Length: 430
Image 1 (cartoon, rainbow, N blue to C red):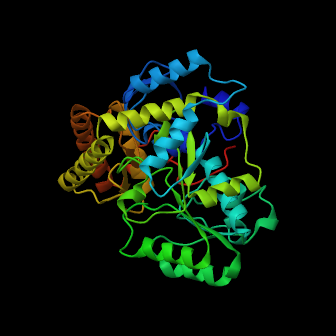
Image 2: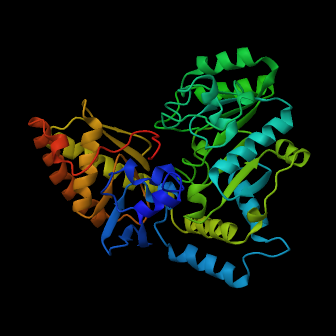
Image 3: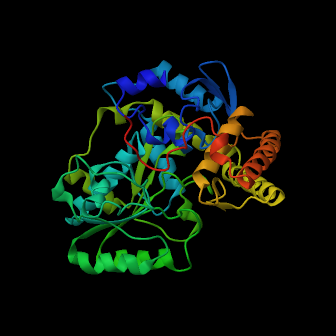
């Protein structure tokens, strides 16, 4: 199926993060027949428990959550599209602004990248300025990828390395400028050189760790002083550590916040919420799309929020992530492997040390797959992960870490691989 896809679909898939080459070239089960809880069944009928990125971070409740699916099926039965508007979008706007008392209004789209483009358009319309300071990964659109026009590695560390901004107009050069997380001076440099043209500071409030003391507070002060719109990208971090944006735990409010992924548990929905005087600028420009008015996305989001009310989902996600990180630590200590463990607890990252680190990572994925687990350099917790699942995963990790340690001691890591080493950045497929 994937060989056919490579002939019919440029790049092989719609999402770079789902390319088999990013996991196990030639060996990754590229397509699924069904998914339920944390179990994914491939086209050959093989069942795997998912200990990777859980639908690329979109399914915090697990695959095919029955309550969310029931709400979606009801929305379909009632008609997913009409000439009139769906009331669910109004109810969802109320729920999200109630969760974020600093916000007054909301707009909705269906994907994270386009929601970020909406937020940036609103900020530019509000301020009449053009320059954007960015910190983090914010999608594929021209406004963001144009950062690589001035310097082709400008977004390394924010985005995957190796991305050529082909097709992005040269006229956008210099309008998007990255700064480093927990490095206030790198932002101040942008503020100084942008002068009165800085429209927005766009950033993930939490990345691999919490912000340094005073970092976000200082950014809030800079935004206020310069009349710049502060946009928090909560597409990844949102609804992981608390019900709502991660910034609610940090004591600093943005002017605009953007959500996607976890908000719909796999159904397409994204939200842009913000202060009323800023959001009203959407009426001074043209932001509109037919698919943003369908019923399924808002219905799914409301069902997800109801689940969060019933159970403390973020606490479950944090605990699951902590348990998996501990499995990695204990297993590495037992086998003597040198690993790097990082990331927020629900968004954990595992890195192998050494010159052959990527080969070790690929071998880990290969061997875990043989033992019935989808596994890789990241683990995104889903509330459907059980203690039994984690215990079984730990047993498999102990076997595989020991195998990697043995292979490393004899210099035979690559010799154990049944195919090429996984890609670490963007590579054009031939």
